[in-house]
Length: 424
Image (cartoon, rainbow, N blue to C red; front, top):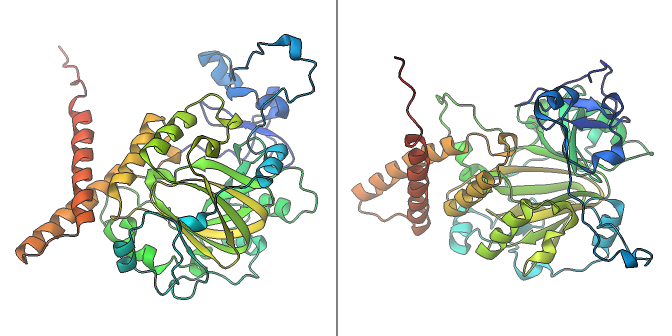
């Protein structure tokens, strides 16, 4: 993981009011004023190279510009630049649009009805919205809990990843600085926090994941204490977004399923089914040069909307492509989990990440490792069932076959590596 600098090359401490830019090579952060990059110029940079990296790898790479084929129409009073994802214009236009309601596809069980047996019977292939947390076996703070309380339990010095929504770019800042911004009446930017994992903080004592998640989660149940690899920490996230925050379309890492509980405020989800056609379109869109100029929901057959209000909990299944809008200030808790109900789709999502050259920082930690642990568990399970003359569930057989194909591919990749040279 990249180092987290607290100071720029100028040795000035990070200040939320000053624009910063990350070098895509060394992943250090710099004040724009220190390296001669203005904030509006950064939007035109595709890959930024800091002064040191520029000496070795050459100058920054700029985004491709579209060339107008009709210069005679330049005087026509029409929009000359595509709307950029996350900008105020984009948010305004998005809020004015209508989409098919997710009521056509989602399930709405009570917390008491939502069990492993329920998912095995109904399949965990569509989103599930639970109106009240009663019966979920979940613990969260009361709705009076604030971002200031988050700071108190996590620590003001904690360095967190923050999204500058208008630029759809990441930056790093202290939690204390973000809370000052969040509680300020003069917000100069729209900043969004979606990746504050707090399992190793005191806040973890106030939040318990839904019982269903704890029963299904591979990490919770199958990660050995004796493992030489670091246990993935993706179970508990605190999401803090101000009004008009927006996260563009994505598939959660490793095809993980997700639970979201809105503590206060509201979230609007734009949901797309992971059909083969939609996944192919998503991969093409994700690798395009003008991704931030195209709303992916317009490229698929159906893009559903689902509003999640205060006190409601949404479960998004494996592989579903989704974007999230925050219409009002919101605090939510959530987490990611791998499970055995749809192993094939989890592996498909992982392969898409590899083809897109997704950075390790944005992948599920030790994904292949947990798959090997699961493979051993399934083998032991099948042997036990066989001794008792019982048949495994069909989804386990299908998942095991998908894992077997993946294992062959991963080991073949390693075997095909050239042998080390032999010293003469």
